[in-house]
Image (cartoon, rainbow, N blue to C red; front, top):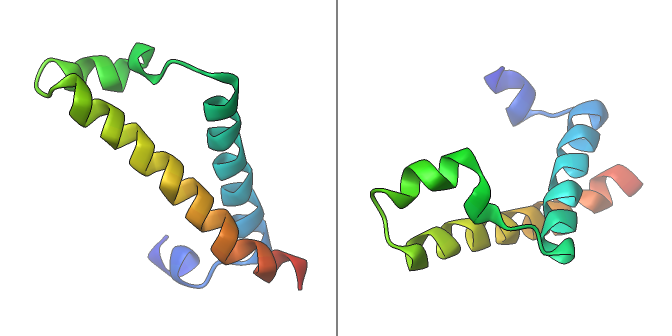
Length: 75
C-alpha cells in the first residue's frame, strides 16, 4: 500500500482526484461538516473553532492536491 501511494499510477491519482473534487463540491454547496459523526465525536473534546479549522485544512489539502497532481494526469 505504501508503494502504491509513493509511486501512484494514473488510476490511483484519478481516484484521489475524484475524492478531492467531491470535497470541494461539498464546500461549494454549503454542506454542514459539523453533522458528520467524526466531527460530533471530536466536538466533545475540542472547541468549535478548532473543528472549523480542521475542516478548512481538509479543503486546503484538497485544493493543493488538485493543483499539484492535475498536470500529471493531463500530461
